[in-house]
Every structure is written in C-alpha cells, then in structure tokens.
Amino acid sequence: MIRRIVALALLLWMLGFALFMLALPKPADPGARTDGIVVPTGAAGRIARGLDLLEHGRARRMLVTGTAPGVTRADLARVAGHAATIACCVDLGAEAVDTRSNAEETAAWVRARGYRSIRLVTSNWHARRAALELGPALGDEVSVLVDGVEAQPTLTQAFNEYNKLLLRRLVLWGERLR
Picture 1 (spheres, rainbow, N blue to C red):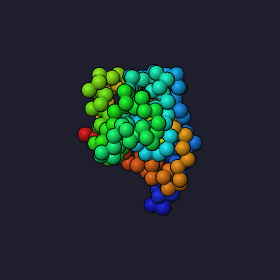
Picture 2 (cartoon, rainbow, N blue to C red; picture 1 turned 120 degrees about the horizontal axis):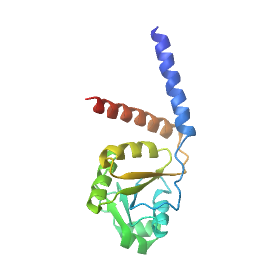
Picture 3 (cartoon, rainbow, N blue to C red; picture 1 turned 45 degrees about the horizontal axis):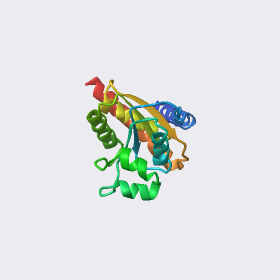
Picture 4 (cartoon, one colour; picture 1 turned 180 degrees about the horizontal axis):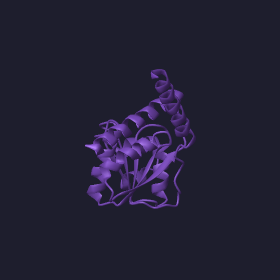
C-alpha cells in the first residue's frame, strides 16, 4: 500500500513537472501598458526587456529589485546601456535577497507610487513563483501582467524552481486554512 502511494505521488510530481516545463509563461503583449515594470535581478535578458518596454512607453517607471548593495544607476547604464532612460525612470531596490523579499520590495515601491498595475519581467521558468509571491504582497487592488523572458534553464534549475513553487503553494495554502 505504501509503495503504491509513493509511486502515485512520484507519478503526479513527474506529470506536474512536465506540465510546468511545457507551459512556461510567454512574453506578454509588447503593446500592453502598465503603471510600472518590475524586474527581479537574475538571469540574462530581464533588464534588457524591461528597458526596451520602458523606452517604448509601456510604463512610467521600472524597478530593478534585488540589486547588490552599492550598485548605482551609472553602474547599470555602463552594463546595460540606455543611460538616459535609466537616469530618469529606473529605481534600484537593494533590500531584496530572494523571490519573497523581491515581492515585499516591489509592494512597497508600488504603494509609494500609487500604482494599480505592474508588468513582472522575469525568466519564463521563474515567472510563476515570482507572481505567486507578488499576489499576497500586493493584494487584489494591483494587477500583475506576467512577462516571461525566454530562457533555457538547466535541468537542475528547473527541478529546483518547480519544487520551490510546489512548496510555496503548500505554505500559502496552509496559511489560508488558518
């Protein structure tokens, strides 16, 4: 009996992982406008996508959350280009150290500006968990447009992200039951 339960749980996990990988979030409509753009630091392509959207008028400002302490706009401009856009319209958040604190830093930024909508620009394999963390932090009054940046995670990254997503969903579900 125990073996069957373990086998069923493993089968469900594998099917869930396959679905997770087959249905990674895609880039959002590039024409969609939001009040702000939020880009957690991490994999390549995120900041470039956010800056491109910002320069095309798809939001008023952009937050890069989770930057290393001491990183300045000038540092970012040296690496990413877009110096004028960064100088006028990009905020750097250095308080976050993980996805959950990215959400908290983002929520404070959104509240301070009175924004009602944001575009979350992050790697496609990270987008679901980042959005999951943003939900409770922002509440129902702020809409989140998920913009998955195409990326090719390693198998280890994908397994880790899927497991983190499952565990976080369980924790949030348990918190709602209390």
